Image 1 (cartoon, one colour):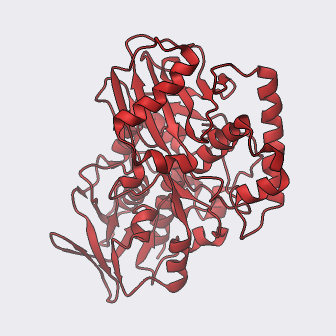
Image 2 (image 1 turned 90 degrees about the vertical axis):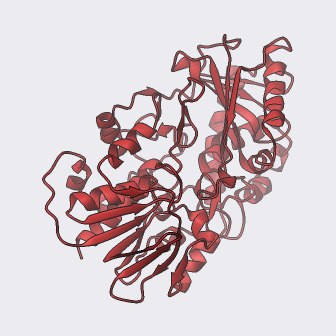
Length: 451
């Protein structure tokens, strides 16, 4: 999905974030000079691996503690079907100037340029919408989203403002499609929960999005290859009362000069880690208010394609908004006859309660409406359920109704110059992205190094 496809955004200079351009080249081989200081990093997702990597390059003795039996967090590549299925992160959003781009090249990632115009959208009876009509709706969508933001109010959701301004569009299935496949996919939550004021106050780099074709895990593995990482080690407590930081796990205690907490927002919200003393009140409130959205993916694989393999995307406008209404054609960018579809918005929460058979049946019903009842069942079916992942709890953070821009900055504040926080949810300007997570880890590494 081309993140923020329609809206003009401001490119935030990295220097404005306190990140030096030179630091982005740290994945080159350099001589490491130990400085005698120790750092514990909690979480081996992109933010934690980024923090650990850059701290190690700066001479710190670093250990990463990861609750799961693998690294990567929401970067997870499944190859069990023979198809490269990135269950979490898939795209490098706006790769020009994006710090992930040069690392991806070093790590050997291959990519395919996203073409959002390579799409055909069908109504609930399987009839294609005309290109002219879709272009008209797309242009109007751009104007309407901008108007909603201009009329945004702190205590009103995007849906509330949209419905007040355009009540006649409430029953349009094509409008449900645009609001879901574009806005709800992009932000990760239902427009009923989305802030009308802050949903679009982040920033982007430049260039068309690219999708990774050989597995995003190659990137995280590249950065982590020389790090000390303890897997299957959930952290239960963090005590920062004394001169050193003490971290409690089920197995033992760890002590360090500094620590970086790089767990997903949901883990902080669920208070799975006890802080002693408690987190500052303002930081607690920011964590309570800010939410993680849910976007789940569903992979279907066949021996032969029955769809137009020249299309990059296939759209569908069911009555239920967000219900498997957008399909990515993997045959366009790989040799595999596979489609990936998505559960979005409020429907993503419903889909998380479905078993695999029910999910597959609903997806196939949509495809049968478009391509006929005779199409075969897939030979492989995989799905994600990020909200139910015990050490993840969702897809990515989002400015929901009641959240302010300041909350993302509050979650990034360090405590007593000993406990530091990283993660896409601490990146106001690049939240919900891999590069946001990466830059947050780099940001905290530089803060610690400057002490």
